[in-house]
Length: 188
Image (tube, rainbow, N blue to C red; front, side, top):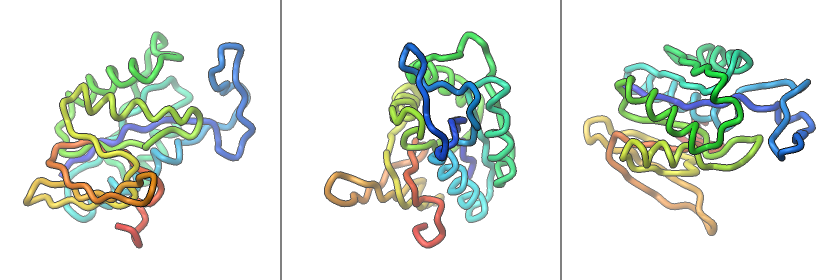
């Protein structure tokens, strides 16, 4: 089973976040790390690879400053990393990033696409659902537990909702966004 994970580099969550005059998060002088929600998704993707075989690919939109996030995902067990580095993409919104990621994902043969349920810097939670829509795939968001029935080509997910959790089954291929939990062995 092949899994693609869309990752993002963000300002370290321990840092004081600053915004520029246009209200965007400023990365100047900040320590950048792989987004924690992206990291949850990579961790679960690697576990799925160990359970079912296949490969894990990570895809990131960003400049050279995003390469450490890609390297971090590779050190976690991803098999290949793709950095989409185009100055024209600097500062684009979630809709534009979703279009770029969707086009990149078309070139990969994957059964499941994972990503963070939001990013730690902006918390917009828009990119992955847009990727799902562009790809014509079901999307399950804010997932805390994730299992895959490869033979049945089904994802079994537990997702957070306002007053608890919901159990959701969707057919593969699918897009799933990770909240803290899906990579934790005790929850898987």
